[in-house]
Length: 318
Image (tube, rainbow, N blue to C red):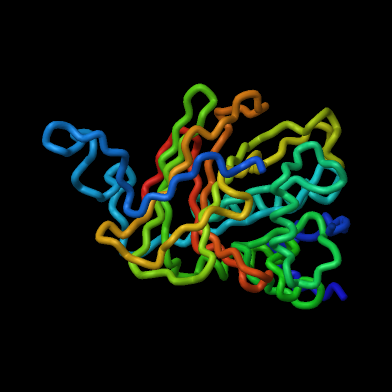
């Protein structure tokens, strides 16, 4: 049943680590604001204008919207501390990320078997990604590449999920596409409250139904939950690109890209996202945002483009 195309990132590495198969069985959405073309609250002065509002609607802090957008790829990985094959899967994905710096971003879902790092949105994602795919189970580690239909056949046919042995080929295919939109990010944090401005630039109307913007809070280099907790991790394992929280609704907040305004962007705001009391290392946090299509089945899903920036920094359009 598992007839898999073995397209290797590194011939001697891929699938030497095997895979573990387990069952297939909100914290987010805090104060999002959708602002077409940007703008802000107006506190008018005597002349009816706000001196703090720039009359030029172009988002100068993130640069002009370019005529063409750099394609970016999102790899969402299924992993767990209980899974002895998963550390080698992480190495394989890290190799792909490093080989495509600035264009490929990784986000790891910890899940199943009571994994101590699993968050509630993980089950929403897993249900969504396998919808209509006829999947009876998942192989760990596995990866979703831009939530696109798998290049394999058999068990994973019509599922936005793929074994990591095929990830490099699928990434190459995704990077060759011309994205319809691009993202720029402005992030800040003060007193454990995070603000994120997501700018989605587009030059032509995107009328695809159920277009969403999703924002993850990512922490890189997270120590295993206790010494030796990661099966196959060697006793001092460090998790890469862990999804710590979802700052929008779990499957994204709706965004309307069907009308091109003069400034050619829409702005999605997240204000005061609270991380007080969370065991995060702020110096290792980043914000990853992407425009996705929320479909009814696996073959209807897509990630149109993505962007990531270190928390507190700004990433301009490219």
